[in-house]
Length: 196
Image 1: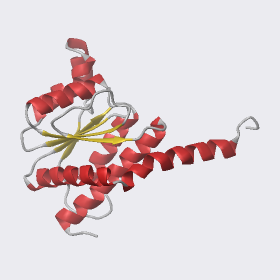
Image 2: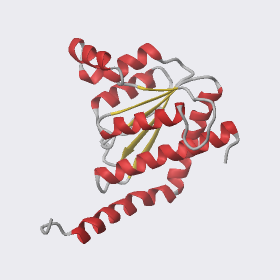
Image 3: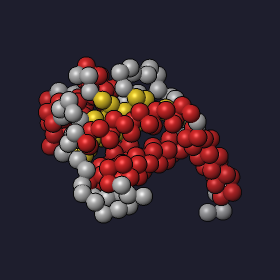
Image 4: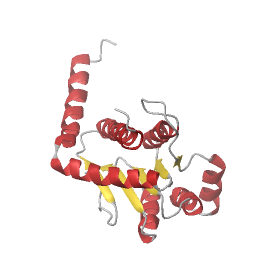
């Protein structure tokens, strides 16, 4: 424990957090957030499903968000329809074995989704091949999709909404992603159920 410079560790983490979170206060973020919220709101109003996905920590965030839609965020209300792609291990292993790991999300989405649904994909780098395969499929089907990512993304896909947080560290990006998902939850509860 004596070898750890706790003050430096805290200050570095806080600085990364603050630099990345600063994007939340920009007009660019507000515009992208409002467009995204409109998509999610219309999906729920049309009895559609909000699909989510991610890898690693982003997968956990996707499940976290789905749980808050289905169970609740802050208020007791009716459940909202949401599915996290990749939650069925048999589907993942079968698809990875018979086709490719790059197709694990796209294959499930193709089987379960319809035009009234929307997608939130989460990728810290924005370069995950299975996420890009899924977005490409959704784009070709002219379906609504949102990508939470960072400005590390190599090539920004068209046809949907990309929210690229400025990269300082993977942790700071993930903190911004879950914060954004929480704002979506709060806003949807307020819009749909008139809850403050």
